[in-house]
Each structure stands twice: as structure tokens, then as C-alpha cells.
Length: 611
Ligand SMILES: [Zn+2]
Image (cartoon, rainbow, N blue to C red):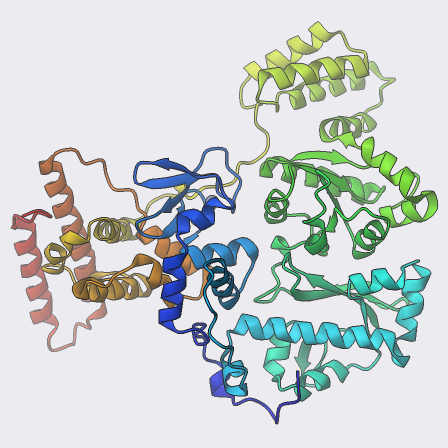
């Protein structure tokens, strides 16, 4: 990247429109050449049921498929977690891509010629914000990388050498160094044309009155954190000497969601070992990769999360937990086991004693010994009961009985009878318990009920209490879904309903697009989504077009449903508009009376979706 002259004009930078690089026509073409069922079908096993396709949601853990894909609407929607959107959104969400990257990938899939990239500063300035933050992080990674290998980076280099890292490993992970100056990175990035606020948003600088905008990281060796597609999204930095905190991580930013990324995943995802190893620190991952265990990843300075487990599930069924051999590590492993279960992954626990962590273990005993430990990794169930055993005094009969009871309760967690029986046998043998006694104990706990499941199921939106507001929105969603399913009813709807009848800004703007498009005969639900940048909004819009209609069998039921929905939407629209009018508005009386009259007329009218 060359030096640009001065700062980019601010107003341009605040433009949030992410479509500016590709024309609407081009995006439309990309979408029409990539059928959503084909694309999603490459990642999710889909089965046709009625008009839609269904599969297991890749964005939350579930056993029955509530993830739906509509070929007609070219949209996906999950009834379990609310994720939704079009084919571009799917790729953005699944592979953590920016809008441009997703469009580019789909265009390439379809063998389309990409329009020439315009790299003028004006266009660059208009790139979406995510891309700017990615560019800044990449520049910072380059900067730290060269610092480590230069004169000022000597301290960092000594540290890595002492940790026995080879030059090749340092290069592989792009390791770097933030020197003792607290302004040099900011100066460097500003020299490249980025503004203070962009550098702060990228997570690389802080601002206060005393120091102005200054580097977040200094006097630290730097570990760039890359997402699955190799983009640098943040950093971890370890202080040189005894400063605090020992490890400092980039804050969460628009591009860095700690709960959905893992350090080392960019390499581990291609390891195909049949399992993945999750550990605590950057150095553990690096040491393992250097020794050939390239299936290792680490959570990012936070506890292992369900989101991270769902990402691992894309690549493997089995995860080996490798936490420190101390009390905190044991606690982390117990938490990790719960998360693996929730995500539907098999787990094992690695025993590294007498060493503290994988890094130390490999340095002392070598990779063959480590390989052996992996082979003998403990099944999570036996790990859990071993920890329980340690908390009991087995020489005391009472304590011993308590332990057996707890084991029996734990055995109730196996839902499948055969699996439960296998574990009962294994436990009885291992702990020298009479198998019939143990089986009886388990059966009696199971009979007490509520014992079968002890871990929390992922929450679905279904149990939520409905409020009048939800009811109004439900009617609006039913109407929007019905319209997209049967565009033919549009003239009948437009006779009574306008976009102004929809209740909040998001619903109103979607309705406006839909009404405009339908009256011109050019409406496509999938293209509406490109007006919205936010992932959450995509889910909400997808929900509007994927609300389950009531079972309708007779023509009379159809007529009644149509009448009820139209009246429901109109009434809520009237109530809302009335609230927005001020009583001292000279037109208050006239408007409310007119509205009421219209409503009465509508209630008594014989309206039908059919002629
Ligand atoms: Zn879902």
C-alpha cells in the first residue's frame, strides 16, 4: 500500500453503503446465477419437505432440522435461532466473509467475469467499514512482523528463541513485536491514510486526554489472530518482562468476535486428523503445530464458547481438551465438556502431568510421548467421575456411598439405553461395584424424573411470552409471507393496506420496498436484503418472509384468515398512527374519526384474497 496524501475526507468514510463497489445489476446477476439451494446444499444436508428444503442449522446445535431454505424466495431462515438471509448472507455468516468477498466468491463459482476493481482513493474510502478494519489489522500485522525482525525487535526475538520457536514457525504464524514506543504504530497507520477513529475502531489504539491517540500494544511480542480464511482480525500480545497484564488481547470489534473465532483455526481446519485439540494459549497452539500437531486451536483469552464449538463441528466430531494441569485447568475442562455436549461433539481430556501445559510437555518429553498421550486421552465421562472421586474420601464408607450415588446420577445423563448400559458396565468394572446394584441405583434415579437431562438446551425463541406488540407484528409477518408466497393477492391487499400501517422502522421500510416492487412487478425477497447491512436485521427480514401460515383447507378458512390478517394489520397501524398524532393537532379529531370509519368499513367488508 502506497502513501496517500493526507487524510481521506471524513464524510465519505461514514457512508455505510456496502454495495458501492459492485453495481446492483452485477449483484443481482450473481444472485440469480447461484441458486440458494445449490449453495447451501454444499454445506448443509438438505431434504425437500413441501415447498421448502430443511436441514440441521449450521448456526446453532439442534437434533431436528428447523433450518429452512426456500427456492422460490431464494432465502434461508432458521425457526430455531432466527438466522436468515439470502445466498450472500449465508456465505458471509458461514465463512465470516465481508459482503464484497461473498459476492466475489459467488461470482467466481458461477464463472462470471468480475468487474475491474477500482482502487482509486475515493473508491477505497467508500469500502465497507469491515474491509477498512481488516486492511488496518493487516497493515499492523505487517508492521509488527518487520519490527520483530529489525533492530528494535531484538528483545522479542530473544523471547521466541528461548521458547524454542524456529524461524519457520515464527513466519508461519506471522509473529511480530510491538516496540517500546507507544505512538509508532498509530503514526505508521496515519501515514497510510487511516484516521484516528478508524485505528481505534480496528482495536489497535486508545484515546485519552493525556496521551492522545496512542498504541494499544507496546513492549510486547505479538500474535496475529486470523480467522478461518486467513484474515488478520485481531492480536494477542505478551508483555516483555513483568508488566501487567501478561497477555493483552484486541478488544471485540466489528471484525473480531471472540466467541466465534479460534486461534490457529486457519491451519487446523485443514488438518483432517479426525479430531481437534483445544487448549488455552497462543504458545500452546504454536508449540503443538511446530511439533506436527496442526489440529490444535485455542480460545481467545476467554472461556471456550458454544459458538466456537459450533465452528469446530464443521470440521470434526471429536474435540480433545488440553487445559493446564492445575485447578483452574480442571475447572476449564469441566466447563468445556459441558459446551462440547451442548454442541453435540464427542470429547476427550488430555492428561499432561507432570507438566503444566502442552508447550512444556513437548519441550521435555518430545512429540512421540505427546502422541501417546493423545491416544490415551480420557473419555470426558471418566474424567468427570474421576474429578468427583477426588472430592470424596473413598476410605470413608459414607463418602464412598455418596460418590456412587453421584456416579449413578451422572449415568442418567445418557439418553440412549444402550449407551447408558455400556457405561454402567464400564463404571462397575472400573470401580469394582456390583453391576446389578449400580443398575438399580441408576434406574431409581432415572425414575425420579428430571435426571435424564442436566445440561441446558439451547434456548429457542418459541417459549417467549407473546405481547400485544408481538401479536401485531405476527399479523404483519403473516401478511408479508403470504404476499411473497402468492404475489397474485397483492392488488387485494393494496386496496386496504399501505406501508404506513406497518409498525416499526424495519417493518415499514421492508413493506415499502415490497409494495413498490410488487406494484411494478419486479419484487424479489432476496434482493431486499441488500438494503440492510446488519446480520441481525437479515434474520429479522428473513423471518418476515418465512412466518408459518395457519393451516388452511377450505376456501372459507382462506377468506377468514385473509380478513383477519388485513384487519389486524390495519387496526395496529391505526393505533400506532393515532399515538403519533398530538391531541392539539388541529387535524386530530378529523384524522382519528376518519381512521375509525375506515376501520369499521373494513371490518364489515367482504374481502377475500380470491376473486
Ligand atoms: Zn439455527
